[in-house]
Length: 470
Image (cartoon, rainbow, N blue to C red):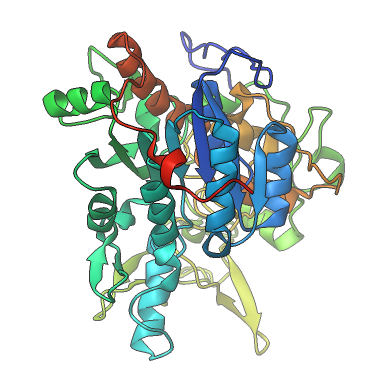
C-alpha cells in the first residue's frame, strides 16, 4: 500500500501552459545544447519565446520539436552550425533584441564520473589531460559575443567551476574565467552552486548556475546583493523562513504498488507507471534489502547471523575511490551465500564489483538522489524503491523530476516511436524544470520590480553586426 504524503504538503499545480500565444510573450530566447527541451520548459514558463534551438542529437531534438513547434530547431554540431544559429536568430528577432541565451553544454568531461574516467585515461597515456568536449563553451561564447543577449544563463555540474580548457591561443584557462573574459566588462554576474532541493524539488541535484547580464535592473541587483539566485524556499533544517525539503514520500505517494518479481504486477493502468522485471537472483537481493540500505550489506537469511562485515569504499594511493574487494559473500557463521549482488566467474560465485550506493533503497523521508540515465536499473545509485521490490517507474521519475507540473508530451515530431530507454536518458541528462524556473522567475521579477523590464541602453549590436539572415 502506498504511504500517504506528509500532511500539509500539497504542491500547488502550476497552471498548464498553452503554446506561445500572439503577444503574450515579449521576451526572446535562444537555446543551445537543448536536448529534449526539459530545461526549456522553465524558460518558456517564465515568459520567454524560444526563437531558435540547437541540439546535436536528432532523437533528442525531435522530442523538443514536437513540444516546441513554434521554435526553429537547428539540429547539428554547434561548431558547424554557429553561422546558421546566428543568422536564423537575427531573422526571428525581426528587429528586437535577444533577451536570453540559455546554454547547457554537455558535462561528460566535467562531471565526477567523467573526470574519474578521464583521470584514469590520462594516467594510462590514452588521453590528453584536457577534455576536448569541455571546449563547447567556445562556440557558445562566440554566439554570445555576436548576438549580445541581455542575459546569459549557463547550467552545468559544479565541477565546471574548476574545469580547464585551452582558449583560442592555446592557453589553459578555467571555464568561468573564460566566460567572463569573452563577455567583457559590459556584463556583470558570476557562477554559483545551487541545490535544487532548496527550491521545492524532491531531488537533491547540485548544479553550477552561471548568470551574466547587461540589463540595468539585474546589474543593479547584483551590485547590492552580490548574487542573482533567489532566496531558498526549502531546507533540510527547521528554519523559520523555509519549508522542509520535499521528500520522496511527498512526490510518489498514492501511485499503485508494483512488484518486479512478475510481469503481471510490474505494470499498472497509470501511464508510464511500469517497471522492468528482475530475474530470480536479483529479486532475492532486492527483497532482502532493508529500507535505506544497500543489498551489499544484506545479512544471512539461512542462520540469521547479522554481523557479517558490510560493504565499504576508500581512496587508493592515487586518490581514486575504490570499493572494497574483501566484502564477504558467504556467511561467517554458517557458510551460506548471502543475498548480496554477485556474479559467477570460473564456476565460482564472487561478490559483484560495486559501490555502497548500488542496489540501495531510497529513503522515503528525504529528497531522492539525482536521477541519472540509469534510473531504471537496480544497480544504479540509490534507485531502489523505499519499500517495494523494484526500481522507480517512469511515472515516479516524472514526479521526482517535477515534469508532472508541466505540459510535456513524450512524442517525437517525426512520429518515430519513443522507447523507455530514451525517456530515462532524457531525464538523466536534464535538470528538474521547477528548480530552474525558480531562478528564471526570480530574474524576470527583478526587472519587473524595476518597472522597466529588460531596459538597456545601446544600439542593437546583433542586427548591425551579425551575418545576413539566411
